[in-house]
Image 1 (tube, rainbow, N blue to C red):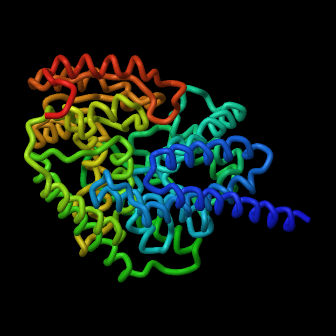
Image 2 (cartoon, rainbow, N blue to C red):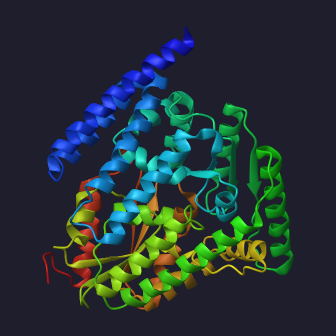
Image 3 (cartoon, one colour):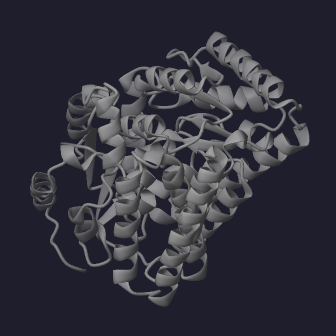
Length: 458
């Protein structure tokens, strides 16, 4: 009977998704289509998750499959080619771990995923998956489940959303969980809790804050252990040819990213907070894949084709609160400001030595400007601000992120001392309950007025 019930629930979910897909295809290109589809998706997940987790899980997977199809068949004409492609591949890599959990690993944003791709393991990123739940309007039911399970409301909302999804049965057990300790002190607690809930193996890479050869050797040893951990668990060896291919993909993506930055120094390239969230996945979780290489080449081509602009340029620090109208009106094509990539994009785009891949990965983890003393992040921010000719810097303090909140005012004062205006804005990039759109808009607009910008197109 349980198997029969599960089969019926999956059939019901498939029927609902086919109706959703038919509706979307019939109204393709209309804004009402996207709005109504997201509303329908979020309402369905919210209403059914607690009582029918298997049904809801199947519905979500097929809904993501339908969305992936729609992004390919009916790409948003307002987006550049690279942006259209980013939406497609990010949907794919959000959906794949859900569809094939036994080939998936739950990871944090800073995990070196070239090894996973070489082992045919799909990485499921905490931050990415939670952001997709929020974008689909089905995060509240997960946050409420986390509250019921005693997860404190001062915890990072990305981690709270994921924990709620786990406790509610929205995602199945992955093959294993793995994370680094970089930036987020919630990683250890979250991944331990999830591993305990699923009774699945876990692996933590401890990255020292000091940048020494001993520290590099220490991380290399852990990466070797991590490779052995996966080989024992999966029952097959790491194919070095596959790893070499992943390294080639990463290096090509890094080279194209450098072309993109060079073009962006003088050009205006439209973007949104949602698109920048997609790029966080391409610059971290997707590194090592052919898709990431294709994306960054298209991104560089798009940037090089954009016009030179004198718009005010804003360097954003940390995660972005996507879905807020002030972000769209200020940084959209009709706005007066250029939204520069967040500093989270700059911590991982470094080439890998094909002769010493684990050494390069270890060095990349240790040299991450979020790892260690605050001076590293300040130097990275100033370097980015000067290169991209930033007129101002926004330091976004994400709710529950002690690392960003604790250093924000120190960074603001140091950046101001260098002659670049900076502001600290509190908010929440995932849980809308902790974000006042009115207050956020007021602070952002006041900062823009101080910079001398005007609303409206050039």
